[in-house]
Image (cartoon, rainbow, N blue to C red; front, side, top):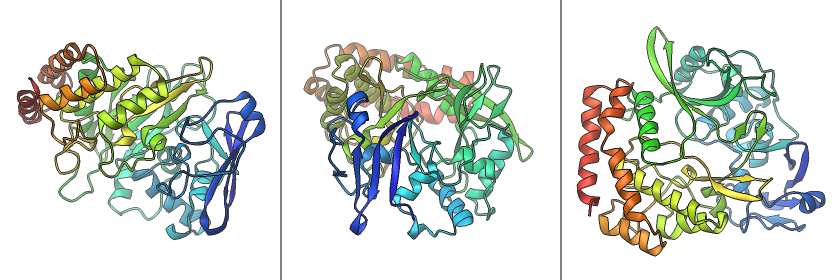
Length: 417
């Protein structure tokens, strides 16, 4: 049983996590890190030499910034199966520290944990089509075992849908696991698959095309986006297009510290828990100290509203830290697609509303002092109005284009002012 973990940033010791009596988990910064490092989560985890328990018990007792190192949904499914196979651990016996030790060096962001459980960083070639086929079997309960490559590549990203973290060559023709230093010309990517195992809620076959069209639409709306690609694969004799996005927590072999909004403010992303006006934008202001970053968050709110992306929960906002500049910034946008959210309402409220009107949008802008809010709204609306063009570029079906267009038109009518 693991009751202590070393937390690393590169080769530097950040501090230690320890589980004490009653399962209480506490963290203590290393003295050298306090002198030379940076605050992992300002005003969220005390930046001092004391032994500090988590502010809340929300994440199994973990401080939020370390909970960001763990996957959820799909990644936890793979983790639980692997720990049962290799360590004979049932889910009830897997503590948060054991989960972090399992992740070891394979986390999103810059942090790593020692000792590691089940390390395997061989950097070998990956067959994405085989990984996709294996993912389908796991989700359908047809695979009692988990392919080792899927365990390594698929256990890191969050979200319910299956996805893998891999490295691609510059021409996107060679794919390999991505936990060793990459060869020259390679870069880090996330590839998303579909979840077609949920009865009555299976993802559409053209999900990858829809998300690719949304990525282009978001760029046109002025959102900062990572590089994205559409990958054509033949899985189980069926050709399908999968959405791939370049990781913004990696620059070559450099790892970038990542803090989700959920981890920062201790918000449960599985239920409505925040408001843009009193949560997202103030947190962005507090962490970044930047009007420009707050404006970016406001623009993203407008895009989520006008594009019918209601799955705007607290883990879909994140911040990156630049140690050279000593500055936080809002991460590029991610997980943007048509979504009904919870009960067809936005997971993050807009001035108290799950389905906002123009007055609600204006109130957020007024309350948070967004000076150019009308111009930003016009830019976002103008981009979203071009949905049929973006969708046609990626061969979304005519029925899919029309279904989304009707929903977007209805929102525009309510929120146009």
